[in-house]
Amino acid sequence: MKFTKASPLRGELSIPGDKSISHRSIMFGSLAKGTTEITNFLQGADCLSTIACFHKMGIDIENNKDSVIVHGNGLFGLKKPETILDCGNSGTTTRLISGLLSAQNFDVTLTGDDSIKKRPMKRIMDPLSHMGADIRSLEGNGCAPLAITGKKLYGIHYTSRVASAQVKSAILLAGLYAEGETKVTEPYVSRNHSEIMLKHFGADVTTEGTTASIRPARELYGSRIIVPGDISSAAFFIAAGLLVPGSEILMKHVGINPTRDGILSVCRDMGADITLLNKNTDSGEPTADILVKSSCLRGTEIGGAIIPTLIDELPIIAAMACFAEGETIIKDAGELKVKESNRIEVMVQNLSAMGADVTETEDGMIIRGGKPLHGAVIDSRLDHRIAMTFAVAGLCADGETEIKGAECVNISYPGFYQDLERLGK
Ligand SMILES: O=C(O)C1=C[C@@H](OP(=O)(O)O)[C@@H](O)[C@H](O)C1
Ligand SMILES: C=C(OP(=O)(O)O)C(=O)O
Image (cartoon, rainbow, N blue to C red; front, side):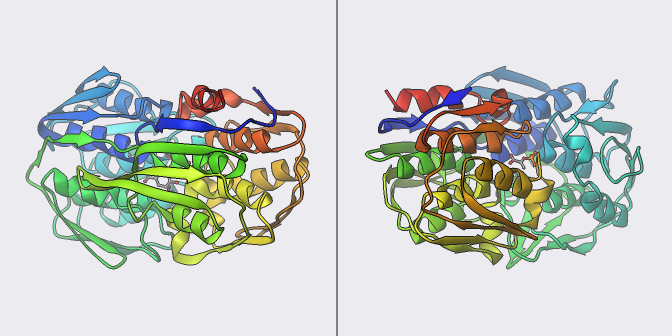
């Protein structure tokens, strides 16, 4: 896939459904009694992996594309799958279902693609084991494949070293079945979609500061879920709209949950012209239309509590910083090293290949903006966020940018290139 300097991007866009919320709607819908109808479900490969896993555990899920209907079997209605569960490229699938599988009355093995088999699972294995789970890394390297034998679990109060919604959610899902209360305290608040949706389905979940708590549930109840557009996907069009001169893009019905909206604050700090319109709430999740107009940006500093609220947007923010005046410092973002690729290393390598002035640090990077970028051959390492980031960078660079492995955008945004092309016409 090749990109050259773009003419202004103008028009309206419906951003595909939020990936985190789509995963959870299938998981919680499967554990609920009754039917869950999901609108604007993300048809990305990661969410399809979640559907496939629950299919294999006996759940009837009708995928009618824009709407998905889950016929839940109740909290104790999952069946032992006949084969290994394949989580594909999805960390969210692997970690969240490990939590609930730890409490079933069967054993199961989870695996995924080459990327998943390198991602750290000890972060969930440790707290789940403390709750009484029997969960083992088959290669003994703390990664998938994971063998889980369902056990009786007990509530714990876990203090997590990382602010991770996947760790928090795995523990809360185990806590649905555990004896007594389960609490998770994080260094900073991570995305709270599990807490919002579990409550929506009738679970006894509370939050106080950076601690989320759950009490065992007798039953969850199926519900209607309207999935907002994914702000992590909108981020690429926010950046493209800001960077390509003369652009104006309206993104409809995007999730702006405060645990996810860090990119909006960072853009405002950088001097971006962004307006939120038609603010609303769907299934407990705040939404808005986002209007961006091309802007001159300045550098900024990003670290601390805001990091979990924009963790998946850091690659595109780093690219934006190359076109901003002055220095941008990204710190406290060591978690980027354990995503689909090492996103610090891959960003620094690829931005440098395009002529950017960027230095890798222990937990982030420093970007001295304002130097024009030129086209290059970019290795996406099959990481969807990297491929989309460099498609946008390619629209603002001199010459041609070629992205290798460009098809990996299917993980979170199957129609990404078509949407980008449509706005440029
Ligand atoms: O819970 C979720 O849906 C997610 C949490 C984040 O991961 P961590 O929990 O590892 O930070 C994020 O990077 C991922 O894309 C989705
Ligand atoms: C890190 C991501 O997802 P996951 O952890 O679910 O693979 C992502 O989508 O950027």
